[in-house]
Length: 167
Image (cartoon, rainbow, N blue to C red):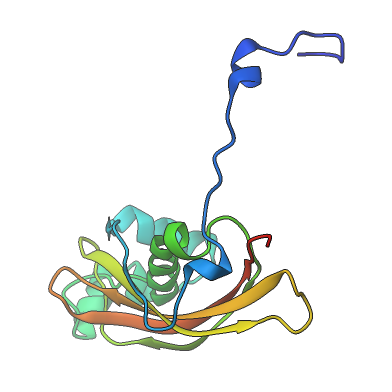
């Protein structure tokens, strides 16, 4: 479509907008989410992430160096692990909007290697009304990233603004 006089395609007129995400009222303290996606990290993921983020620690791209320091091969950059686990939680926790208010108590428990498959589990640990935005609340989750052997590899707390339903 090149100008305002062009005709709108039929499929656009028939399209239905589906709401995504959840509202503040959809959560309760103690609620647990076993996030349904898992993700296997590849060597390519790790190489691309460390290159794009200028994270040039030889543990993340030099197998001989990593082996000399007690690892079976290259180690996945911890911030890639964090970002991947956070991404696994978005669909159920924060999709649909609401500002990300930060992550706290980020702890890496064990190394992750290319070929490892990570899953995530989140628990609602706090909820409160926003003092400055009456149409929003703040939800805090504790998230754990777990590898295919059931080992905890990362955990953290994060908070997001969540929109309230209109009364």
